[in-house]
Image 1: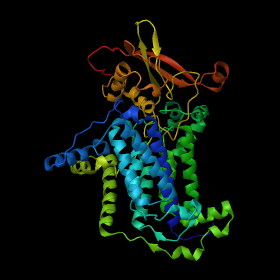
Image 2: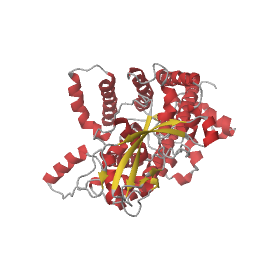
Image 3: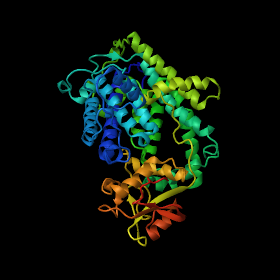
Image 4: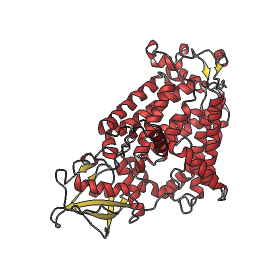
Length: 514
């Protein structure tokens, strides 16, 4: 691969299309479950605030919107909630084909922020923040305009008719985002006590205790301990060393991009983390420049006419950022530094000031800190919801994706994220803490609106009429080995740990409190 120029017109085109793909899967996943999560009969119904235009009400609304930034303050009926996911899908397709990208990005950011805010606890995942931060930053990239039907998508992607280079400051902020995503995650692994990374045992438990394991994760779990130690070293190296190569030479960045992509594909296949790995791969294109893409085009299609003449790489106009935009992106850089200080810096009185500043921008999730997989739990405890009509025969609510039936293979659902199944993983990490509002509301709905969550369950024994009593059973799950699978056909072993000391009577006037 010869040394090429550092132009990024095509890189930006590729990134925006990939970002559109990520948004498509994010909204597709939402369309499948939004009513159960946030609808009128969902677990977290969105509060509706009647609003009439007046000076006093307008001030109240601005204050409320700042604390709870979502379009669903205007209307939270089920039709609007569901219909907005379809609008998100349409906007995602427009971004993929490169039609009016800047207004499309603004609408996508506002719409996804509305769901993330309205869904509350179900959207407290770092990849939701990452998608919002990347989308907001993408608004400052050169907009791709014009009717997309004049050229095929391939020709539009390869064309440099406009030849507007993104501003170097914007490119740096994207590289800085990719750097933070990787390095902060690696740093958190070595700073968290008993996280399993420094003693090289993390990967021995990682596949077994992941929120929603996959079948390939089951396979990898059965590899020998020596393999897992090597995996742990490679994971730490990938996150603590590779980020610095974002600013390396052309040839080095191309090779590192391949390693980074392989790392993300491995995580994608062995863990159900929604769209996280697709988004990481999209951000990974900032390892590249246009020279890498042109080289790949030649190798893949062997069509010289699709590749722009080398001399034109330097004949491009640079994006001109107006002063207000420069101020905004400069502030974004400072805010990301604030986030890093709060997470990794020493404690001090200065943190009070930063927290006050953070309260202004935090609801909009435009600057975040990332600490993925900082701690790997060493045992898997699952909660099983059981119901009865007569107090003698107890029937099990079997979820679709979380471990349950010992003979059911771990499912692969990414880039879809079944958020209730995923969230239940956290419930067993802090039992009896009385902090799981979503879980209490779910149990309440099973008693009072039994049909509202039928889609959650593979088996719902009380889909038509509610039980009289609900109880919780806890089990420790461990993955089986190849020999057990061959003999018994089971992917899991489990050990009964006991019942929760309290049961919930469906005719009770008090809500569940677990």
